[in-house]
Figure: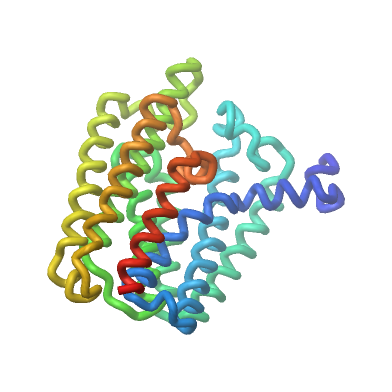
Length: 303
């Protein structure tokens, strides 16, 4: 075992350990705050604290799942041009050390979840079971794999609502479903395109069951679903009554731009394998998200 594989490795080992947790992926857990924003409790500290604890719990649990997945996939990851640099696949972190980290993350996530409520702890437990089933077996089943990814996002939104004890619009849940299916399909498409372009051995067996044309069809359907369901939410009578404004419909322009920009990055530039990286690195996407959030908050809270 090398110095980089042991705690004695110092900063190099710590960097590898942090990388093992994939903190960039924590941005996905921002879906937890959706109910907080749209329930008009964003400016109330008690609600914010519960939502923040829910966010922390999802971050810890998702990291535990990522670590477990890296342990299981370490052999396949070594044949992938990017994934071979992951801490476990590269040998910088041993499987045993990674396993201990996963257990500690799981325990911390459970404590954070219980600090919110027993009901929210149930949501976190369901998320863990779902992701474990995905990692062990179901990620190899076509279509089931992308739907499980989508359900993970939906649990984040539902968990955010349970954490602050509010009822969230069904339209928000449906929009989340379409959006997460869109992101999952684009991820699979980018993975498949990379395998075909570089002539690699397929690191995900499920890719053999997909084709570019089929995944493109899913992208079109789900992108349309996002646009329509979000638009209908902004025009729903309950939405207008709750917010006392019909202006939320105008935020649809940011949703449409985000969809088109993402499709451009996936179809024209071959990106999409890492949605959070796109959000962080692509300036137009980041600016568009901030503008959408500013518009939503202004309409809901600054009537």
